[in-house]
Length: 63
Image (cartoon, rainbow, N blue to C red; front, side):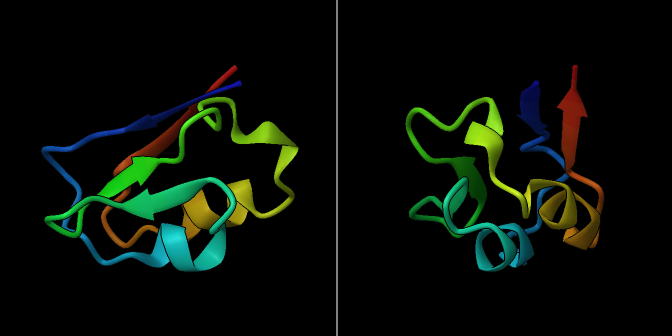
């Protein structure tokens, strides 16, 4: 599985980082980014919930 973050859509709400802090963080400008080595979600059980929590749908999962 691969995680995509559309930087043009992200508004920096931070819901992904709050929901799955083991996968997501926020950059210096407050926008979402993946933690190093977590590009595949690392089996985090909260990954799909974090994708659903994004208010603008900026996060996608690709099998």
